[in-house]
Image (cartoon, rainbow, N blue to C red; front, side, top):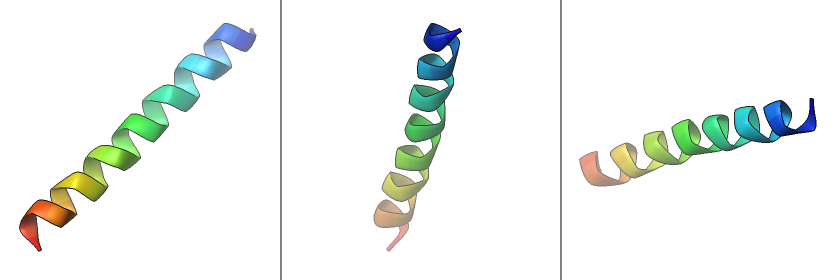
Length: 27
């Protein structure tokens, strides 16, 4: 399921981006 892969990729990227934003806020 390509749609499933795309959804998972977007979710992982979102979590990764969220962590970067949190780190930038803390620092």
